[in-house]
Image (cartoon, rainbow, N blue to C red; front, side, top):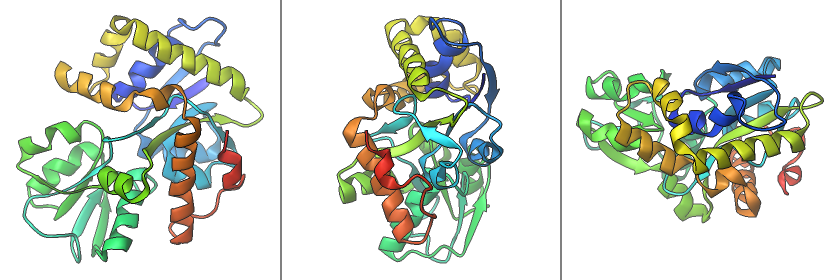
Length: 274
């Protein structure tokens, strides 16, 4: 079975047991490592059976895939940050973003609509190049995700807005970041849900089992940052989205469709309820 997820610590922590034969009854997996901005578009051709994508990409993928209630990244206090080197907003400025269909970029667009900010140019670059680019003056601002929450002061950057904090304040909902999708007609979603939940529970119960695997793919992060990353992004919503999680996803997609930023999803928003 083909699975794609990022090399980030939260994903390797969650999927270690599943892809290393530690979940009884699960099949063998062919793993592709790719950043979420890559899988958001790569999944369009249906090449993966299970795939990690941004919630913002769901409108383009739900005709081929079904959203699973576990394994993804959704929470509180874990949203993307908009960073600058100098004071000021992003109106008329150049902003570096990690992908056009990332939830981070969708949240920035929703915030910009509400705040009246109109960037002059959006540049898509790999997320690890964003902070150095802003620090060097290549971009006026940068939209960052993942471990950048913990490391941006090292680049002399300042936080213009915490988009997760804005989202939570404006909606009362947790922040829907990354989703796990199962290919329709190929993967039994109930079975896949049980496999992934078993993998999450194994990771929590025996964190030492995945440590070498996580660190091997952590792009030279130090252990303290890896631990912070996992504790922030692997939480109760990773095991089960639950009513609050699904409500947050519906809120995000409703708002983005109403603002004309994304199309409606093929299955209908009501079908995301569980």
